[in-house]
Image 1: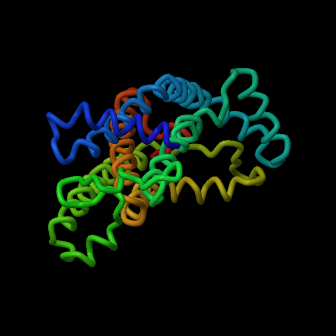
Image 2 (image 1 turned 60 degrees about the vertical axis):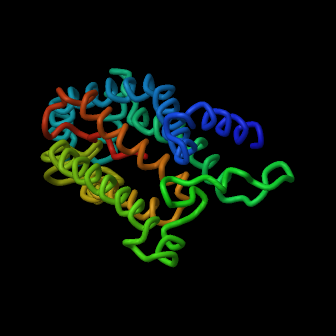
Length: 255
């Protein structure tokens, strides 16, 4: 962990002539962008998989008509169709999973008072007037929501809310009329279909939970979340721009 701390500190030193006291915050944003670039091939692969699954909707509808009264046979037929077409329903999870280590690393770097047995100098850095090791609760106790540090958080909340609203509207459009994987109509319903239906209704709201994350984690980790979420929203808008409305399993908002 001390090696990563030194690496981030060196990057901040390079950015200091441009960003001055906020150089460390700029370094975190740049590190986040690098992480997103590294996992971009996975995001592209997830998009290709999603589009491939969307093309299977007519065949899934036909299987539903054929095996609607036999949920087990329906589920088996859908899984066989996915296997035959080499489509994985889990591919969309990989980009989010691969960036979790970077998030937790930043969380620990800016939560510990000591790194490698020495005082953590990273905690002395700020974004404008807000300490990178502080949280929203600290800003509220030091000047309130409209104090110098509080205004930094309000700006982040506004950005997260804008991105979440964009994701909400886009996900609602993508999920409209989407057939549930393994679902059934008429006389039967595949195991887990009710849970999938509930998840589809809940999915558009996932982006708004980023607001909670930003409020409770250290500001450095919050910067990672905000930057990654904004990048992901733009990335999905580009990668899924030709995805038809009602395509199954629209890409879920990711950190």
